[in-house]
Amino acid sequence: MRAKSERLAALAGAATLIAVWKLASLGIGKDIILPPPERVLARAAALLSSTDFLAALLATMARGLAAFLLSMLAGTSIGAACGASPRFEAFVSPLLSTVRAMPVIALILLFLFWFGVGVVPVFAAFLMAFPVVAAQVAEGWRATDPGLLEMASLFRTERRAVLLGIRLPSMTGHLAAAAQSAIGLSWKVVIAGEVLSQPALALGTGLQERRLMLDTSGVFAWAAAGIVLCASSDAIFRAARRGLARHGL
Image (cartoon, rainbow, N blue to C red; front, side, top):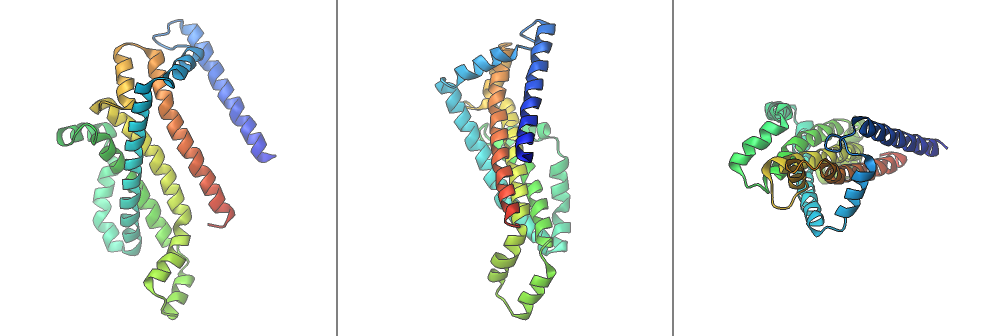
């Protein structure tokens, strides 16, 4: 019953948002400022039959997934090292703090001097996401039950067995939370990077082109693709985290 009521509440919220959008569009009366939702929906549906759009979508997805995987690999390694060694955590904390504090736009503009246009969105998203992963993994490493570790030490359990049998299960929930945060952040930063770097195939490039043509409906339609990517990945990871929680992980 609770899940059903939550779904109904979500549908009601979505319907309210669309109704407010429609009323605001009617009140403004200028599509270039705020097009009505049905016009944006029609544009979005038309995009699905466009090979250019599909190619751009696939290219953005490839960049986002590349940034996500890189951030998970680097963040997990650095986070585990931080959890295991307070000295190492103190050593890398200035770097992680600097990356967290750096405005995304400034980072992307700097990378435009150093990298190719196709690499800029990936590297920017990676740098924004991996500190989030590292922080979660370090917290998960430190959350391991000290009693289990003491018992493993008494029985002289091999390090690999401790890692796979004790550390990893205790970190599973934190890894899932890190992955959920990292994938959502990767999509957003990749698309922002594409808007500025303008690769040949990219959702961000499509957004910028529609903006220059004063095609507000097109901007909304292309942006909707990015929203769907974020929402879909978020739903997948939420379901995975609920599954882990049911199994006590």
